[in-house]
Image (spheres, rainbow, N blue to C red):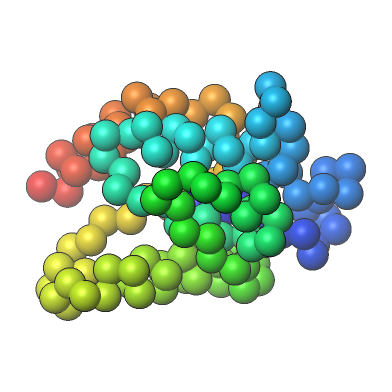
Length: 128
């Protein structure tokens, strides 16, 4: 999951990274992580962003790996992919090439486990 930056003032809302904006008592990023964790098809979650701040709101959540941000969107996407490869590096190279990854933004407070499952199932059916 891509969860923004603290360093680009044009991307901040009232001086804050939108990932940490409070929505119904939880940071925005936590809404998405909770939906991913409840999905039937998601085995783990790699969250890219300001690592220390993410640790404060996601610390203790099972199967979440925090990945330090590297820069802009594309650089952060590649950072997530490298972290996934590192985590699953004990698998044969052929398996890694078939390892699906869902890239999602942190700014989807209404995302649900059912919507994630539906998307993954439809994508898998199309890929078959």
